[in-house]
Image (cartoon, rainbow over all chains, first blue to last red; front, top):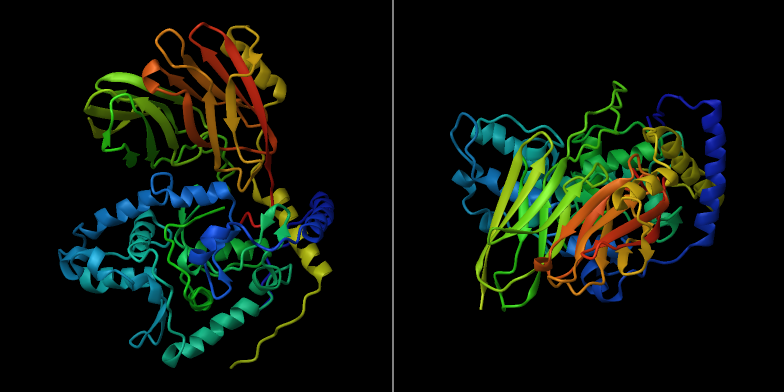
Length: 282
Length: 107
Length: 157
């Protein structure tokens, strides 16, 4: 199970390109192993007990976009989420506000504790899943599709309402076995390149892959994040899938138990770091 | 539906040059991308014109092509001398228009 | 605690893996596009100016030296102009030398703009020179260029 490789589609020409890639990457990683020391004055906010947010691994231009709510494209989803909060949907004729009232009061801090163990499910549930369970069970509405604009908007909005608060997931009690599974996933080699999360984000954080400074993989307070590459907001699970594809592993499904467990581990690694939703990342 | 966000200072002094920031939700489909599954080109669909008015006068506009990133951000300046209204219009090449307005008090 | 398979990965293995990831992206991940050439960009500029040869100076373009991702590259342009009714900058165009199409955008200013300045985010298909071409109210044209490096691979997932 740990080596689910993608189909071998590599042709001869591509192999040559792979070989060339080796040499290039070798030059970069060996040549530029600079520790992340991006921005001295923002360290206080984005570094807690030596744990560094991905913010500190971004270029100044990217940080400037995150720092300005009128340049940060993620705010478009925050606004949409705020609208959806008050929109009646489903058979019960309710909106989120019907039960939860003013989101700015009721949702403050909620983002910081997900994923969490839910007894009736017998497993972890992340924020997206919590939103959808509420829609189905309490509103009589359809669950939003993963990565749909509506689910991203609501998750981003709820994340935004905890902005600046420290990440604080629980890993003890009934959550403990799931935390262990997530941790295992983080250290497990997968895919054709036979790499684990930890090879980049633990062993080689602060070094470069070509021109990209590798972060510590503490995406905990950042997602849904506006990625320059995506040119839009995307979920942490979408990011996981991207990482998995890069090591040429078959990604898990967004919302799968594997990713939710991994999410708990990653969010624990981000403990104490501030919620930055919607963060801006490369 | 496109959604816009606009930042205009609420107040300014006469003669000030203010900075205005705008952001709109739009894919800016360049027409150069291919659908990964079908291999077919995704048809072009972009905002091709942005216009900014101050008390009815166009003071800034911009023509865009597929090289402008999705969810376009555009910031620019305006020299203000009296209180009034701003109007911003994004014109989509399919003929749709998205509008946003803002007020400024100039003391 | 469950047993984990934690291995020590040596530096060379890591680099090889990283390189392969980069090459995989370069080779398989991105659709191939026919890009414009620097000559087409120069043709476009000639058409824009109606054949007038732009002088260097007065216009500025700011882009990061290395773009974190080519899909969204913060870009600022400006021109040195008093922006009075008699003497102002009419427009600044941004022109790519290696995107699918040379013209990215044009900003039109008026004296009411106060400054000939604009900020936008653009797509850069690859490492290239980017031109900014400005027209002043006296009909004169000015040009400048910058180079943006766009890397493929690394953590582009």
